[in-house]
Amino acid sequence: MGQFNQTSPDSFILLGLSNVRSVQFICFFIFLLIYLTTVLGNLLLIFVVTMTPTLHTPMYFFLSNLSVIDISFSCTIVPKILVNTLSTQKSISFSECAMQMYIHLVLGATESILLAVMAYDRFVAICRPLHYKIIMNYKLCICLVVISWSVGFINSLILVLPTLSLPFCGSNHINHFFCEIPPLLHISCTDTRLNEALLYASAGTIVMCLFFFILISYAHIMATILKIHTLTESYKVFSTCASHITVVTLYYGTIMFIYLRPYSTYYQDTDKIVSLLYTAVTPMLNPFIYSMRNKDFKGSINNINKQVNVHNFLCLDP
Image (cartoon, rainbow, N blue to C red; front, top):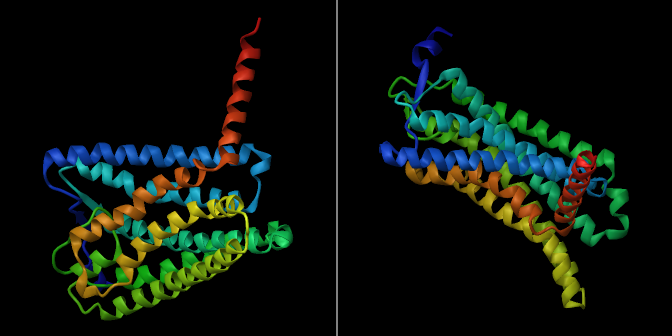
């Protein structure tokens, strides 16, 4: 323990995206807009699903859980970015850095699994429609969500503990806007090949297996869609998957770029932009991608709006 304290700094300095003051002000307002949009958009999705009985289906249950993850993602990363963007002391304590890294890895792994679960839900709905309610029952949905979170917590623990045990006896400046494993490995003053191998093994096992599972699910879905003779009906069925495909492509693409490429090709500025996509931009876009093209969801918003207007009218009516 004594050696650990000697080689571990009390705090790190997050260099952020830019040290130009005018750019920092622009970044602050952009991140603030992203943060407010993410929280309000995902809260709206959760509220509408909760208040609409017709949306109490497995798909919207998983979407609500995804919104919880997105809100947590944003609240874990963005507030610290906002504070450090305008602050001259861009420090983060060792314990705060450890907690931020642990939570963000939990959320990342959980969202990866949940996106695969949603692909399975679409597979059953399209390829096994007559058995959908039997297969995707309430107990299975709860079980899948619990498994997603459990794997996230365990996987994050396996990755974070070895990273925190590394000696950081050199510079404590992290060329990033939050605490993530690759930049921490970069500033460690010891051999990190074992940590890199553990990172590749974990990311490879979870991300690649889930990604191939999603590809297989959509291969079966596409085969089923091609058997539909009516073009209009084929488009209607495919449109129910388009939003999920968009999110999977954006999220898995950025995760693979960060965690599954050789460590020797680590580019700090590029990695910061890519990390920004899956930690801030994707959580903001998810509720809009999933809901704005969904007639059921938009219809539910209109119904809630009408109910609120009627209630206000009755309250104001003397």
